[in-house]
Structure formats: C-alpha cells, structure tokens
Image (cartoon, rainbow, N blue to C red; front, side):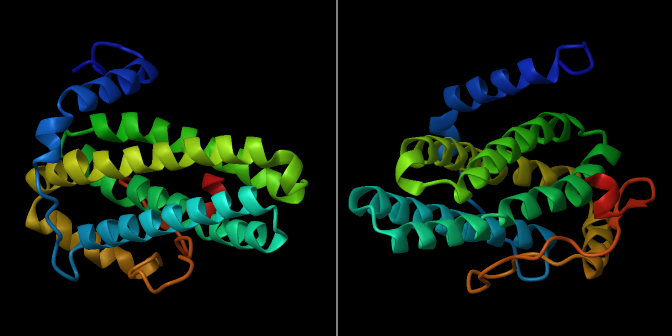
Length: 219
C-alpha cells in the first residue's frame, strides 16, 4: 500500500527494518519450515544454510588473519569471500524466479523493497572484493568494517526470507506456480547442498514474467 501511495522504496526499506525489529520476538517464535526435496523453496533454504556457513568461516579466518598477520589466513579468507559470490547467485535466482511469480499474484511489495537491499549488499561486496589486491595488513581495518557490514546485511536478509518472504510465498503461490517454477530450474544452476564449494551463476537465459534475459543483458 505504501508503494502504491508513492512512498519511496528507500523509505520503505527503513520502515521494513523497523517493522522487523518491533516484531522480532514474535518472528523468532515462528519455526522455519524446511520444504521437501524438489520444492523450489528448498533450494533457497539450502542456499541460506550454505551462505551462513561461509559467513561464519570467513569471520573466523579474518579474526585469525588480523590477530596473527599471517598471509595464509588472509589467503584462506579471500578464498571464502570468493565462494560468497553465491549470495549474488541466490539473489539473481530470487529476482528472476520467485519475485515474478509473487508479482503475478499481486504481491509485489517484497520484490520492490528487497531488490533495493540486494543491490546495496552487492555494492558492499564489490567494495570488499576490490581490497583483495591491496596490502592485507594496511587494509585490515577497512576489510573488517566492510565484511562486518556485508555479513550483517546478508544475515538480516536471510532472516527476512525465512520469517517473512518464504511463508508469504507459500501462502500466495499455487501448486501450479510451484510446478512451473520447478520446471524452469532446468536452465539454472545454484548451490543445492552444503558440500558444494561454489555455486554457479544461472546458466542460459533467465525466465522472467515476460520473456527472458541473458546474464549479459542484465549486467
């Protein structure tokens, strides 16, 4: 309703964060419901598990690298940061698969708000990745600050997905929607289990609500 009334999406993002904070106790009590294998939401849930593991691992390595100043810890940290490109893959899948179906059912608010947050997270990740070629010791404070923001924002998005977006999708989408979505996955690759070290970006054209776009066109 706020979007329809012309409230800027950026303002709604702030209101959304406030809303989540106010109702966090109640949201915390909502149990995450893992979907069965083969359900499209299962992919998103598994991606979030993998992303959380990578964030935890990167944090541990960064702390060791800063404390010891050993180059091997920095090398291991940056290797995990590269694996965290799965975050962008996850968002691309969400933007081009889940969001269009929600919009077709008249539930467009999450797509407009979350897409902006995705782009903010992408910008921070690019800033972080750009520091890889610099001197680790000299840039340690900046690396730590950027990674902390990236990790905080990604975890906040995972929380919103698990507690708000996914339950809303289960409520609004039909069995037919989920079946069509599953059929579209044949043209996409992504992280399916926690043993996969790096998720691939979607391959081939990405199906949209009207036609399809290649990754090159999107970029």
